[in-house]
Length: 333
Image (cartoon, rainbow, N blue to C red; front, top):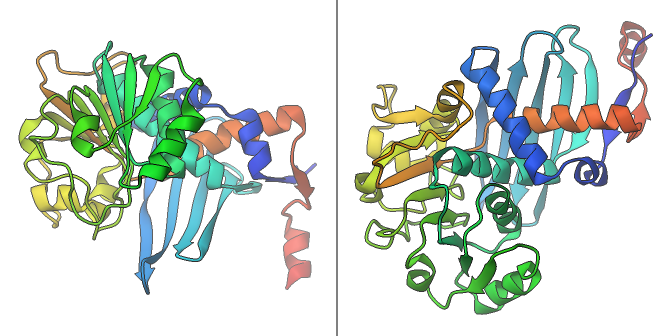
């Protein structure tokens, strides 16, 4: 009997997936990638008008129970939307259509959490979160899932927004969360720094990061945007990306440092290769600072979509749609 397609809403996603589970799902899938059993399809990207963009990411996990899928999303000044389509990698049948806003926010934060767990100091005293948009909420949750600093200082240019962010976050975590009056105040003493902004020009340099031991730069994912200055690379003893091809295509910071052509990027590591060595810390013992540049990749979405789909089947969640069959396809012509 052909299995019905499940349509899963945002509520279905957040009902079955929390941050620790998302991070573990990513760790498992990236370990498979490091073993050659999973791979990404490079991002397709188009931009137009005043900051509008459309994106598509694909990926596949092979072997028993293999799945593949695509996330497609559009962003404009008027709004946007996203959806993930999950397929059986052996039979090619559509398994689920998943609303992907929450999925995307979780995977963006979870990959940061996984990089932090893999690269950052084990016992930081202070951390800084730069940016207070919707994705900053899940970035804070990802940090809390893998590290327990004494405090997190939060900064964004608008005082009202950062004050409201801190007000909503206080009491949710076992560490203090404080609003910083300036970028400098936020970064002073911060051993882990996460940048999650829409900055178009670099606003953080090496001097500002003098106390930083691990930097997550996950806000600028379009070729015209950047969050940190080029001298930051001089402090970094290890530079890691989630996906090399997407970084080549979309990271202004790395393209300016290592070149925009096809020549090898010497000194840039990929997170899955580090995880293939083992599940523990991969931080060099004498590193001054490690740098993680997250661009987004299909496997991050697929890792979480697979977990969501499995949970939905176990709990019988979502709306059931007519299965994809040859007869249905012929009738649709």
